[in-house]
Image (cartoon, rainbow, N blue to C red; front, side, top):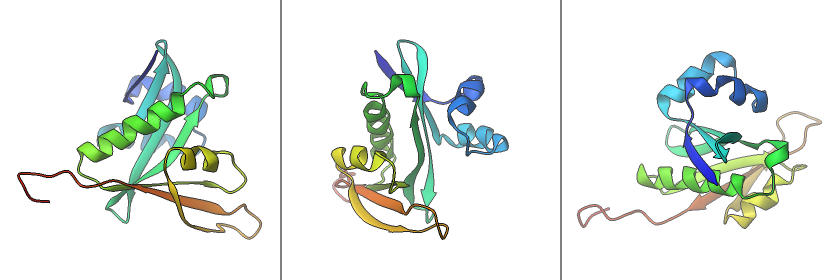
Length: 145
């Protein structure tokens, strides 16, 4: 069984077993700001997702990482769905993700309904970073948008 929950300080060791990019000092900020999720499979850590706001207004998934021994079991899909549901609940109407052009994740995001929306070369000999977006209709609030 797959469950998704907000990350907690008690996840620190598991988190950094998967995330080599987040400075350790920022982990507590992600927890405080509600910008980190953990997926568990049968009660054990299986995947992580962290995000922030692009241009201070659009949720952007900075990292989705499924432990290698847990891949291709629906965990990443469940984690993305939970994140999207949370973003909808917060009133956002679109989200962004990115991945390197040489990674398989681009196909995963497209299967989830994400559409290509650009890319750039972060370094002269680095793979292109591809950006994707997904949009949905705004919920009606009291008869107005």
